Image 1: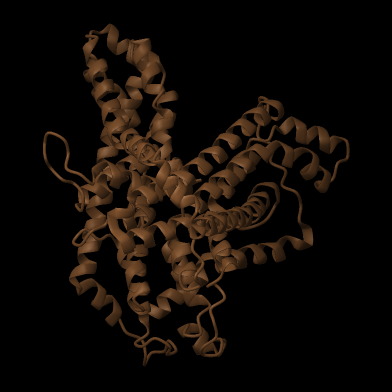
Image 2 (image 1 turned 90 degrees about the vertical axis):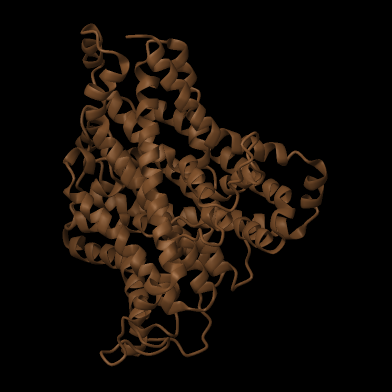
Length: 559
C-alpha cells in the first residue's frame, strides 16, 4: 500500500470534522471571554432565574425518566411477564416522537377542547387552565420523552448481569427482594447513572417542551431565554447568548465527566466477566396479568392516548367540537399541505435530513477505517484524539451548537467573501456537527468485529488502501452505515432546538412550522402538521423492519 492513501484520507476527514465541530466551539469560547459581557450577565436576575429553572426541570425530568425507565426494564428483563414486545414498544415509542409533538399531544390530551374527551363527556370545564402549563408539566413531559434513554441503558445492563452471581444467591435461598437490592441494582447502578446523566443533559438543552409549556406559564428556561433574546434583539446580543450557552455547556460537561468517572470506577469494581446473561424471570404468579395491564396502560398514557387526542384535533372541523362523523374533516391536512410555507418546510426538512445522512456516511466510513487500520500509529492516535470533538456537539445542549455556528458564520467566509448566514447551509452544517456520532459509533462498533486479517490479506495481494476499502471493508460496514443514516434522518427531520436559532425566511423546517402554528393559536393546523411529520417518521421506522437482521439490531427499536 502506498503510504499516502490513508494519510490524505485521514487528514481530509479530520479537517472536515474540525471545521464543523471544533471551530464553532472555539469561536463560542472566544466570544464568551469578554469580561464586560460576563459582568453584565451575572448581574441579570432573569438569567439566574432561568438557570435555576433549567436545573430544576432537568433534574426533575431525568428522575422521572429514571424511575419509569428502570421499572419498565426490570419488568421486561427480570420477570415472567407476558407481552414483552408490547411493553418494549411502548417504552421506546417516545424515542421516535419529537419533543414538540409530545408537548402538543399532551396539551391536547388535557385540554378542555379535546374532541375525544368532549365526545365522551370527560372534558374539563371550558376555561379550565391546562395543568401542563406549569413547572410540574414541564418536568412530567421531559421525563416521558427521556424514558427510552434510561430504559435502554437499564435493559442492556440487566441482560449483562453475571449469571453465576444470580445462581449463587438463589442457591442460598435469596428471594426476589434481596436479589434486586443486594445484587442486581448495585451491578446495574453504573448504567442507571449513565442513563440519568444523559437524560439530565438532554433535558437541560431541550427547547420544544419548555417553550410550548413554559412560555404560556411565564416560566423561562435558559434555551427559551436565549431564543427570546435573539428573536427580540437579534445579533446585537450574540455575546450574551454565547455566554449563556457556554454556561449550559460547562454544566453539561461536568455532569458527563462526573458520570463517566463514576461509571468507570464502579464498572471495574462491580462487573467482571460474565459467563452468561443472568435472566431471572421472577414469577409474578397472580400479579402477572394485572402488572401487564398496568404497564400497557402506562405506555398508552405516555404516548398513544396523547397522539390520538392530537389526531382528533387535526380531524375535527372546528376547535372545541366533539369528533363525530358530522364534524370530521381532512381540511386541516389539506390546508397545511397546500400552504407554501408548510410545504416548503416539509421539503426543506426532507432534503436537509437526507443530505446530512448521506454526507455523514461518506465522512464516517473512511474516518473509522483509517482510525482503526492505518499503518501510521501517529495518524491513528491523532484521529482517536478527535473523540471528544466529535461527541461535544451531540452531548452538549443543541442551543450551544446553534449559538456557536451563528458566531462562527455570521460574517462572510474569509477570502471567499461568501456569506452562509441566513441560508439552509447553516442548518446543514449544524446537522453534520450534531449528528455525526449517531452514524460514526455504529460504524466503529461494526469495524471492531471485522477480523483485520481480511485487510492484511488484501494488502498481501498488492491492493492499495482505496481498493481494499472499496472491495473489502465498505461492503462489511455498509449495514451499520445504513442504520446510522436512518437514525440521522429521523432525528434531523423534526429537529427543533438548533433549527429555532438558525432558520430564516424560506429555510423553515418542519419543527419550526409546528412550533409557529401552535404559537400562533392554530392548534388544528399544528396537529395536522404534527401527524404528517409522524407519518413520515413511523413509515421510515416501519420500513426498517424489512432491513436485514444485522441492520435492525443496530437500531434502538430493533432490540
